[in-house]
Length: 382
Ligand SMILES: Cc1ncc(COP(=O)(O)O)c(C=O)c1O
Image (cartoon, rainbow, N blue to C red; front, side, top):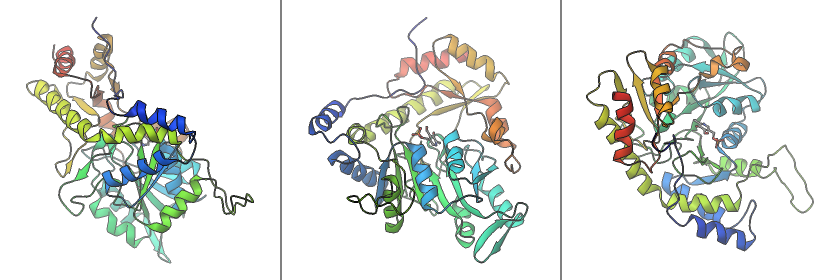
């Protein structure tokens, strides 16, 4: 058996060690320091976002965004069933209930099904939207840019604005993905809704070890998120806190690592694109497998490559790959099927079920070369 190929591992080829050492030597190792400031500016520049708050991880970014959006006990938040569990847990942390939706061809929330739900199952009262069945306020929607695929939610924006439903973009996996056509042309994922949330976990396109960020274009929202992330301190000398905050600030050490990685992003994106094209090349003649297309309305970051197994042999394919030392995985178990989430409302889910039954995640780290991709596709094509 040849070497083990992991699904998504980090690579450090820039100034990571220098910056981390410098942060430690400076003794600024907690929630403030020059690397935090620089990291936030760098993420702001990459995404064209005027305000960025770096926080502990993508999950805390989502929780901060939902809290700053005013989501509270008894509210409902619309969300896709096909997402990492954090998108949904953050709704529960806010004591609200998720309403689960299906996915579209690019694995993102199906905006037509959401619009249909809002038009037929909801009503507006005093400028807010209420679910007619449960009587609960629909306070927000989380759209997720799954595996770097920019979510198509152009038609949803107007109806959400009219119904005072705040939009939170879970851009945990989509740093580097920009829209190239339509109303969002030129915009970076995470900068269209009221809040965007990024993750810098070790498996993401760039990493800070752990880490996350909230993006917003509103100065007031920025102030609120920043305040909430630092224990909602109103007077730091006398320890006055007028509301409940969180200890969610990123450390200067993690920000130092994140800054060095952010400096590598352009090179990483080039490499990710090459890997995607190599998978396309090596699977193009096999009609039983299809490397999933990325949306043609965006420049994708190609964070993770997805293979659709068209002959019903998904499990056998996964076994073959893993037995050959290749870490391939199923896509997520759907959130509405998780035991502790089964009692929440589910709206017409069909595509997501078919996707889970047929798709797998392929190794996509930037350390892969053409030989590796040839080997991986060879194991399957065999
Ligand atoms: C879609 C999605 N949302 C949220 C998160 C949460 O990010 P973190 O692991 O940094 O908390 C992740 C990543 O792990 C993710 O993939």
